[in-house]
Image 1 (tube, helix red, strand yellow):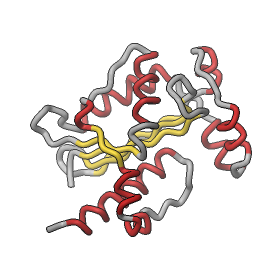
Image 2 (image 1 turned 90 degrees about the horizontal axis):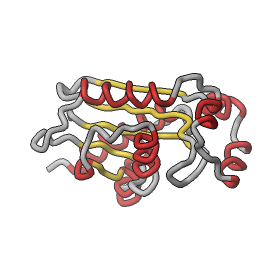
Image 3 (image 1 turned 135 degrees about the vertical axis):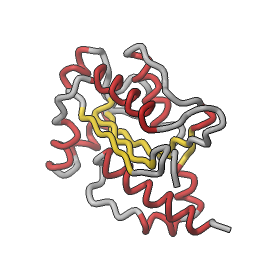
Image 4 (image 1 turned 135 degrees about the horizontal axis):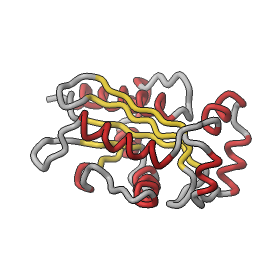
Length: 179
């Protein structure tokens, strides 16, 4: 497995324009090696940038374990710098040309990608990949529920741990469906 990336984000809402608190990415680079990226963004800087919260999402977060809440809301990274670093990290680690068979995954094409796209655009950036490189892990997990047993997530709602767990599930899917 190589040239595949799994992304997870933690947010304060369900729509573009909400705060992206953390971004975690785990993948197999263009050479097949493991690479990871994790940023925890400053809530204060996100407020200054005008990002919003959804009341029901905030209520959901407040009901979570204190350690999880502090991990997600305790970031200090500048979001504009973090997105620039993420984009450069993608270019450095993945071959994303039309014929490179690059795949970028998330758990919901209608959640992570639109929110992340709006986040990138807010800071004047575009995704480093094309729309045809985007894939939905949630669909695979729903169609093949046995693969979620392979996830073994140690800390739910940690973007990096979720990305790693989902990648383990994706690898199990590839093994399960191998001809």
